[in-house]
Image (cartoon, rainbow, N blue to C red; front, top):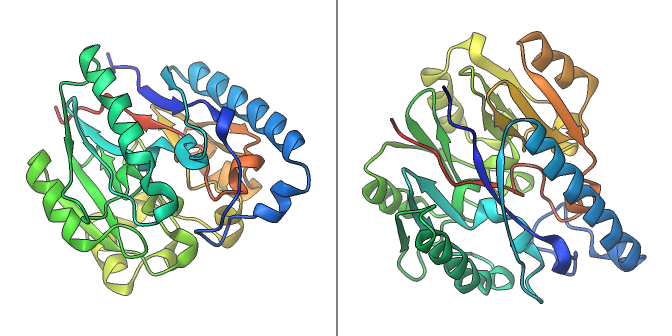
Length: 284
């Protein structure tokens, strides 16, 4: 029997959109009604948790920290495989304060037996977690994004730590500042992706490794809906409210699509995948 996904989320009590480090962030929109936005973010978070649990996921919810609003996106905090976690190094100063707090969260998970090892990258070796290092359980390797945030040299550090292949994919769109904004491996072997996010060389690599019948191209509209930034749990896919086009494409392939209104988090440039970190991926 497949092991249910165990996902880390961070409580949104301290979430806000107060600065701009990607093209999606709208602090002005948040500032017009911060109290209403916080209430909406809480409702969205609870709806996401319910959808993930309905899809068979077990959840670990950690507290956030005042002044670090983007902790609510733990996908950027670490990469985890076979119980071993390596904690992110953030590119932007606005997020670098998260590193110590996430290190504490992961050490607590290690002490509780959820993880077996917690490591850190060298200082200055920028790599922003599973958002830029996505495990593909069908192919048994990682897809590693680099460019806007994570650096190419970090891929070698990660590959040495995990002892697994990481296929580098260069990102060339500032809207897809992490790979997970425009790239999502599915449980049936398909890859849902936004082609303009990738360099010509990265697209060639993808096409060489994934046959045409397993490639699902996302549209500009899908990207705006943050539909590619989705959580795939078996045949269930949890995502922000999506487009008719993508919903149809996925259901025709046998997936059950659960849509959640994540609008407050989209204002910060994050969707369902950004808000979760899988803790129990296995290379077996």
